[in-house]
Image (cartoon, rainbow, N blue to C red; front, side, top):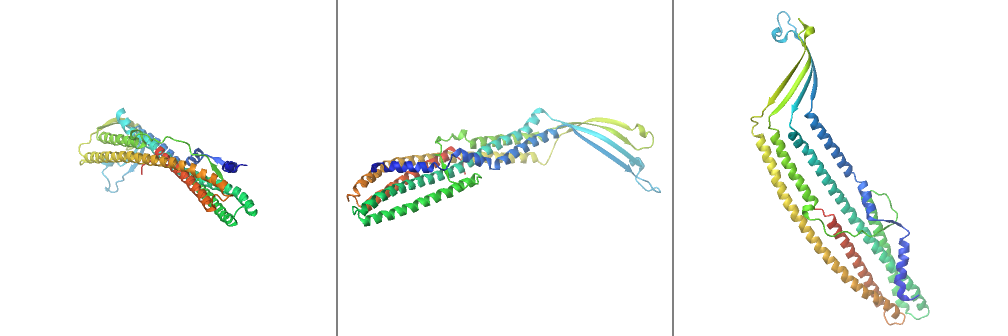
Length: 414
């Protein structure tokens, strides 16, 4: 086998070993996290509560029915007691009453709109929660994937050095290679074995944290698929969740002002009752009856409560506008900052990959010259170390790139 093919051989061995474990992708972990997060059940409960509030409001403005029964006996003893002209001495009343406030369709729709707005705010909150969970889980997944790549790199180098060990040991036994150089190589091989074990432990630790975040009880080895490529450009602020939330807040404040005005409109109610009311003496059997009526109520003066309520609502509107302007500045500022970081990261990846080609070429050339003394062992090991560092730098920058794109894709403001 040609020495120049050792990297390809070790890489194939590594892929075969990794294929023995389970393979999962980001969508699996996102699905499990959302499934095991109670916040969505809480939001569903709040939606059901809103529908009940809507039904309660309709019931309040519907027909109200009540039943009242009164039994009164006011005795007069030796001339002492309530005036019978007032109490009739005794009284029995059983009345069934009906009442309904007359409200316009516009009035009812305005009041019901409060619940509709709150429902849309819950939808927006759910989207933000999904995005927050998605960002957190994706960040941890990317970190785990980076650990996996670092572990694979350590395995690749270990496999490469293990093949070299057999070759150099044979040369050392035939006195074709310095024993001192071989011992130096052996120390580097053992150090690399420790590095591989540390990389494996770091991956398993971060994988355990990922499982914890997603509500998964599992400690087995899992191979992670690469994170999916996503659009690095977020939506414009006017299409973002924060803009939608601001619009909903504005609509809610306007609706509250309309409700305040409605509370001071004249109120008209119709009512009716029927039943039995009698003082018993006389024609008690004929005291069954009924009545109907109309009531009109017009608020005239309430100590300027309406004025103060509207002023408070205006303060909320002004505060909303200030927060909306700040949100826009924050959103656009973070987008610019993340795009700048992404550009720098991509430049570093390109520069590191170019250097990596030279580092790999140096190792391949050193493999040929090492047995003949054309390259010192210390220089050869330094070349391998440089190659590892460059590969690790490329991995780190690619992981950083994934993280930046995740932030842009799931952009959330603090």
